[in-house]
Length: 503
Image (tube, rainbow, N blue to C red):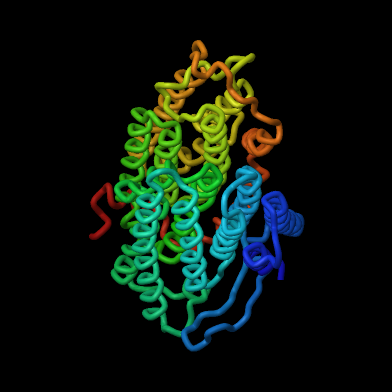
């Protein structure tokens, strides 16, 4: 029942906050939201102590027949592929609530939506029924739309509607693929393992894989389906950007591995070269766009697009090392992007601006934001892949696992990784170094309570950078099972290069 608790405690908590009898002041509402969000994190820690990383099978399973007429069952479970993301979701939800303004308007509705968002994402990560995954996948759209539309910036309506339309199309395409898969596999169940056991003809797999891939690349997002993300990040508040970049984008990349690779790997090897090429284009495009941005938030947003390309590259290669690397990169990007968005939020709160042409000298030890600047430097170093931090391990594993299969695309992604240092160094140099401008001479001090979330994320970035095995060991056995009995993409690619594939 612990997996159900991860889903239903935040959802019941959201209802409790929204319909709390009597008056609930801002402080009480925030405290209650923090207390409720702490419970899933505690449960996740308990689960981690009982999780067997050597067991490749699904653990802590729960099964309850639900709508048997259409083959939908309440089937939950967790394995090495989903467990790190469950932990990430629990941690970042608590951080997002803690980092929210204590005086936020309509606080009841705001905190209820964040808890509902946590519930939907958690359900998607633990669902062992593809239709159940889709229901939770759709559930998170509603709270995120309102979080952007109500508490966003000047163009929040436009950004929220654009997000809603893109995600709605994504959901329709994913549902189409799942319905077709269940129907062609017998039509009696949507159970994940049952569907995996069915072997469909290659042509059928290709037809079903196409809408699934488009739907997931919209959610990730990957070029050219990326345009909703920068608008959503710029208009969203800082805590919402933390959740959007840190967790919600991972629903798309998780779907690539869980459903794209696992359910359609026979077809995957044929489209893998195109996916790897698309990954390289997206990585270079995101990095190039980040270089020319003047808004700090847009720099981080386009950086996310580039780093999502690395995950697509690793998924396309579909080797044991690259799939392990893709999961590690998801966690790495979640921690780093959350840290960067938090720090950009602090800069905006204290200076009233995110314009890199206006901000100067914020690293000034007397009148600037020296600790914030130091943490920002740590974050951009991690994103740029400096050794000793989680970003280096993640990107090294991605490139090492993908290079034997797609050497050209991997080298292009390496160029994108190099550009990460360029655009982040440009941003840091302009904003934090130099002389503090007179307009910024009397900045409000950053309280230690405002620094706690950034310190927690920084600690995670360094610890996993020094001890990556603590996370890698969780999903290595599961990745081996995921690829067992499937065609070796390296062999197929060699046959393709030699022109022997269709002979």
